[in-house]
Image (cartoon, rainbow, N blue to C red; front, side, top):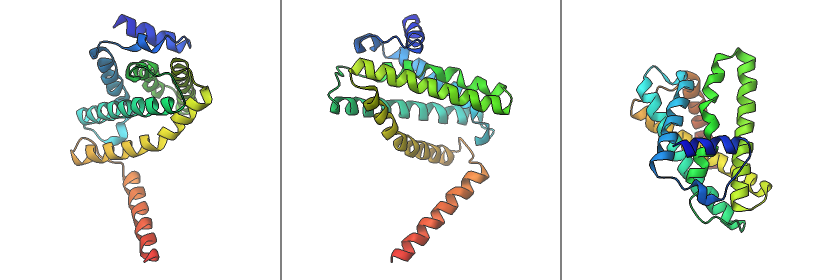
Length: 196
């Protein structure tokens, strides 16, 4: 586990090893990923008072998003003639290590918290793109394009996971979100009626 933490710190300093160095024993990235999901749940107070449910939702979403992203980027980088000779899962997990710090920004005053969130998100993006680009030996722009293309899939996954968590009674959707979803549903129904 110490090696994995050292790798997180190295990636934050933009030092990247060959991909083979990020093939850990399965339980190490699994534990780190589960902890990241649990820590991220601290920033989901708007999803109701069921703390265990919120933790379960965030752990599930974090796992699904990471697995899907690692698979998607593996395919994307190979299409770009990247040298991806192993799983990207371990690398993606350690490159996402900044997620441990992000919930701490909620302790800052309003505007400072927003600015710090943006800065941490940008730093996390730089770390991730740099790591993937170097291990696959493809351009930063190609890697960044893959990350951008994955964003809509991530939003769909979030919506599906949130819907599952609501149905299971893990979370409660904020009223504004319910109203927005109802308005979008009504708009799509109206568009369908017009087409007929």
